[in-house]
Image (cartoon, rainbow, N blue to C red; front, side, top):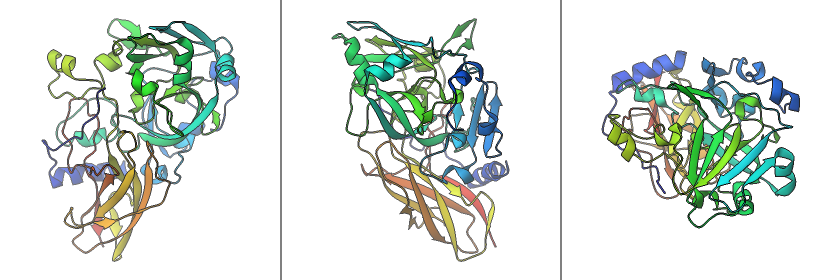
Length: 406
């Protein structure tokens, strides 16, 4: 299994260009009826016209919440949850929908939504989902990168409900040489001269590793105890705790068991760490799976005026997707990392979940920025800088915001 390494320093940000970028950055529904799954597939106004979302593209929709509202709750409301789509929402009739399971299985399956809920035990898990491109804009401080220019809001923590993928695979019966599970969505993406679905794959070992309270992967129909909305993959979405959001395929329609990773573009070519983009580099780079240790300041906003001796700082931190890893410590600095204040964790601390934190940090007339870093239960600390890569993935250097001393 490939694992995601920490991104170590090789291309660093200067203080001036980091501050200039962050200055610019700082200025810058409940359950649905079944009929809405079929006919209401455009984005809902409640989710994306509330004024709390930064909309990067509308067709397909790609949006993230403003950081000031992101950490109001440990469980992220649907209307504040980021949306990542590669094509317009597909029109799906839930009454005729069937999930197919094929490939290296003893008994191929074709399962309706009713059969899925009626045959398998339901389960729920609270898990953080984050886009591999979260904080992508910060990569552009070194050199411009393509893709959705995510700030730090392409992340959310939700309660996902459905059935364990392992139980469905057990019913199908895995053949001896089964090594990977492919997911294919029902969306239609124009790529080159053809149309492809969004796809992903995970190792069979991940799919079959269920622990109490933390399944290896889920086939979900609900988010925060409400039916999935079209923007979040209704009627069925795969959710893979600890893995980048790209592996949690929306509008899931097909599962294929294979002896190798999926040949889909979003596994074979995209979502890899490459620097030059040569054919051999793409071919030799493994797919991204587990997300890296990270932390972000959500309040105060960039360029806030600091007038008191202490400033209240808050944000989120999440551990790497390694099994058993949790957030152990969050530290905030007001002097560019020379000294640190340990923050108070204000939320539950769990595997594959973010932790919310707060700190009262002493500042002075010379304070020009605030910085945060996190340490996990494995003893790993967030790196000071992140290595630039061509697609702008997995940015997890220390998070900085400029402030103005009053």
